[in-house]
Length: 176
Image (cartoon, rainbow, N blue to C red; front, side, top):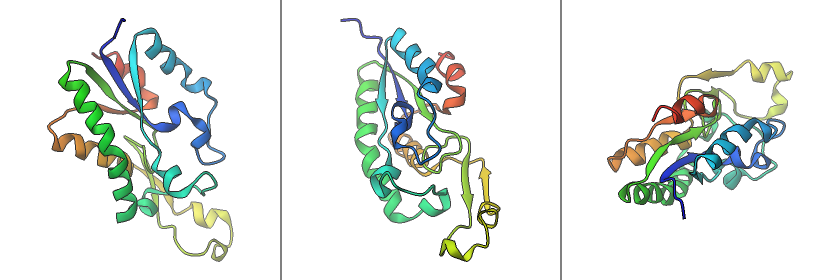
């Protein structure tokens, strides 16, 4: 068997757009180049779990990082990530190369370079119109909750992994 001895960790929705908040799902063709590249180059894939789906289900509203930044959600992310970190650790201990962790720019959970924040709370009917609510949302140069915790967990174990957004996958995978 030909093992490429290379691994790439992917945000859940890169392989499963069915889990994305409506209407933000993309066509799987958007991700096909990355997936085909990995298959053609014998790069193994680890799919991260989706804590938003696990915590809130499929019929959830879109959330902001500021809404998800509470102890229970952070604990869920950590609980879901520990087996992934252990898997990464085992690959590295057996001379595999982990090419990186590929996230989704703007995601409150899986953003790497950008995430969305804002002062949303309370009853939606108190907003006069949708613009009142969306005016409180902005993108900031921070990681989403899951990526923050993932980076902390690997750092605590002395593991150095490159984190990058899907939009920049090619330059990050090809740099090695």
